[in-house]
Length: 226
Image 1 (cartoon, one colour):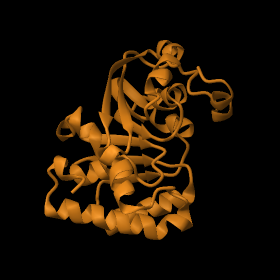
Image 2 (cartoon, rainbow, N blue to C red; image 1 turned 120 degrees about the vertical axis):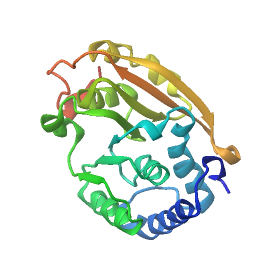
Image 3 (cartoon, helix red, strand yellow; image 1 turned 180 degrees about the vertical axis):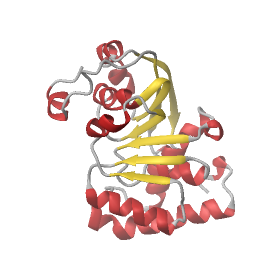
Image 4 (tube, rainbow, N blue to C red; image 1 turned 90 degrees about the vertical axis):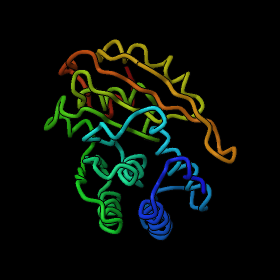
């Protein structure tokens, strides 16, 4: 019922049910989420991941890269809703990559690439390669910008899923945006169902090539973000 607004068919609804069951069954092994109650998972994970559909036409997107995929959010829910999407999932924890492989096999999702690396290392292979990148519950926005933008094509879009304090993160990102030649095009605010909280999606567009000095090593990024 909670996902009714997304026009899912019977197969897609079944995939979400299987996703939930597998997530809960495997959670203790992989430490994927602190949320396991069904309504909470459907609202705070599945609905939240799909909420980008309200603001972005994913039917026109061919490839999507997700940074810090963890339990698969938002990329796997988006893949269920838009089976044509070709995913690149970047996840540095080997065990979580294993979970994602098993999940995609269970749900019979094809066209998914599993990348067991940190984003700042992956950029050596694919600098300015992706047209769209997502990240959810990974890091503060200034940190995310330094991780994502070097991987993004000029003119590409980075979608950051954020909580209710997103305006503070936007204010803290002025220098990062300027340094990395990007601009926030929009910030979309929405409510999760059943009073589960306020969320936002921040849409960032890359304007110019990123200086090759970025991204720095993660220890440097974490110690002092741009």
